[in-house]
Image (cartoon, rainbow, N blue to C red):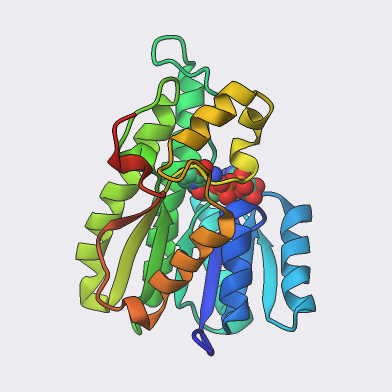
Length: 252
Ligand SMILES: NC(=O)c1ccc[n+]([C@@H]2O[C@H](COP(=O)([O-])OP(=O)(O)OC[C@H]3O[C@@H](n4cnc5c(N)ncnc54)[C@H](O)[C@@H]3O)[C@@H](O)[C@H]2O)c1
């Protein structure tokens, strides 16, 4: 299988894109650490993977805490002896009320702490383990790193930073044969966008933001994550790759 003998950490592995990616990587042979701040949902994902005959363990983590992220990487080493794939995916979205003037500074800092600092900590802790035998680090950015929406100021800031960190880390870590890439999804039908589902007008607008007028699924994104993690993508490095049905490519 594609990832036989390899070990992967997936942060945000309890929900949406992370859950689908953890399941797909495990089904293709990886031993997976499902890492999340939500222990109930995370334990369940790991149990589901094992029930399918694959290998997974849950580890609780708040990615905005560097010591906890270091402990997560250490857990992977203690449990499975190595780390080959790090998917820095955990993230939060704003509630759509965060205009730059009125938004509390704490709201900004919280989003940056999880979406931006969390990715930095994941890169730093994983690369320290990978530098002797190489590996792949995948970071979840967003089309919102490139196009602006109103009232999501900290989210835009954090996702643009993820793209910048991906480039800088790829350059610095190339000498260790560590590839660093990012994905930039469009709107994906996960818990992250649930709040918008109830309002038909808003939901229609979100759908129409994509060339084929529908949101993506977590499984569609997971397929790209698995490809980027694989040797088939061995010449792909230092970029964010859109997974957005063209959403960032056309005028609305
Ligand atoms: N859904 C979308 O439309 C979309 C679009 C572009 C990018 N993204 C990004 O994709 C990633 C995954 O989002 P999703 O759509 O699967 O959302 P989701 O809410 O379904 O899953 C996110 C997971 O991250 C976990 N999490 C939140 N804060 C955490 C923390 N501090 N430490 C550890 N885990 C934490 C949550 O418990 C949850 O399981 C995020 O980085 C998000 O910004 C999502």
